[in-house]
Structure formats: structure tokens, C-alpha cells
Length: 95
Image (tube, rainbow, N blue to C red; front, side, top):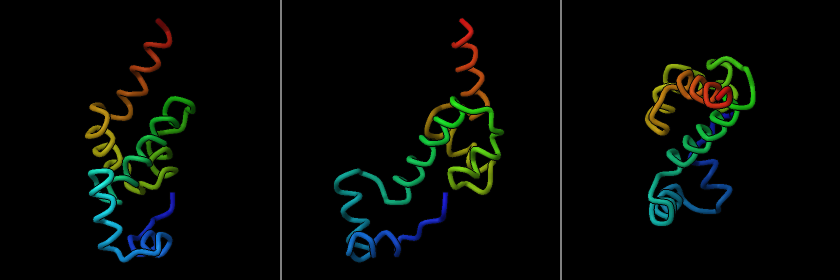
């Protein structure tokens, strides 16, 4: 939920920022920022399924203060907007 800087991550890993980024790219094929955003979006997906929180609240809970940016990133990763995702899950649950 809190903003995490690359310097904070590098300090925790006892690496320079560039070394941290190189290792992420090598082992995960993504940057640390991409990894964090994907983790946040996975947590958001879980909240969308398990709660009735609004999209804006879900976005804020997982660290996206701008819910429209959150929706754009969610759609890019999962192929549908958060509202569409929640509605399709609810429709599947009723069937």
C-alpha cells in the first residue's frame, strides 16, 4: 500500500539500484517496479473477489492513489476493467 522507492529496495537487498534492477531483469524478466505493480494488481483482484469495496477503495488499499491509472493497469494485466472482472465473477458464481 505504501510507496516503495528503488533506493529502499536496494538498501534492503544490500545492492545498488542498478544491480537490483539487473537481477530482477535477469531472473524475472521485469523491473522491480513492474513486479511491485503486478503484485499489487494481484492483491486488488483478490479484494475485488472477496469484498464489496468500491474500485477506488480497492485501488487505494493496494497502493494506487489514482483509480483511473489503477483501472488502466488492471486492464492491461488481466484483459478487463476491474468492474468488468467483478461483474463476470459474480455472474459466474450465480450460474
